[in-house]
Image 1 (tube, helix red, strand yellow):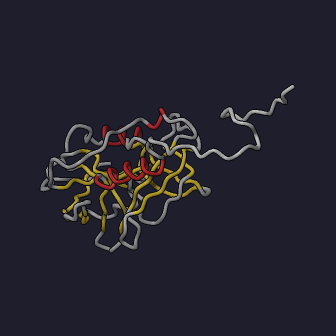
Image 2 (cartoon, helix red, strand yellow; image 1 turned 180 degrees about the horizontal axis):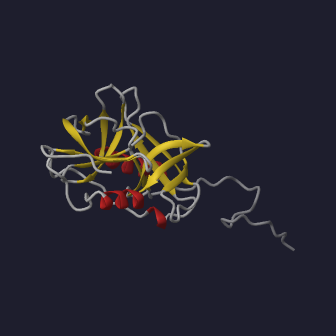
Image 3 (cartoon, one colour; image 1 turned 90 degrees about the horizontal axis):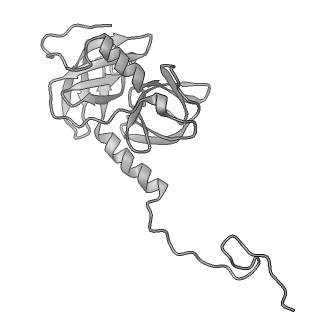
Length: 221
């Protein structure tokens, strides 16, 4: 009588000759993250202050509204460098140190701007991507996962590495939707201001639907 051999999950005998699976025709996680990161770099700017400190910012509206951290935007006028190398004056139009948010206006239109996703819809374990401008000049990308659901908190905690220069840059989901503004490291975890808190901030300072003229601005907050 024939002896039955244990079967592997693929149907072959355990301990038998190795079977080389055909290469996958799908997109790997690595290449997908790389494609999303390339897009996010287009909507990420470098923000420089007159005192030579610098950080990152996000083109939040295509009409020239830049969102960054309050601790990055410490003066009235900043140098804003776009991904294509152009440099513009960024005027501080609103600032909220409590939420670590600031808004700058630049005199440019038809800029690339991201889709915004509510951070309240995120689940723990979802892949997230951070983009920033480290002090050494090269753009940097980090990937991690949501540590816990944001709920109604203005802060989103992710298991992701953030470095000096990431402040003010975008935190996005795996599809490139912006879900927050990178702010700080807390207990080894990356901490970002949620997209929901950003929209509430812009609504409060009357920037939800338009960008003020850079020649006639005042700081709101």
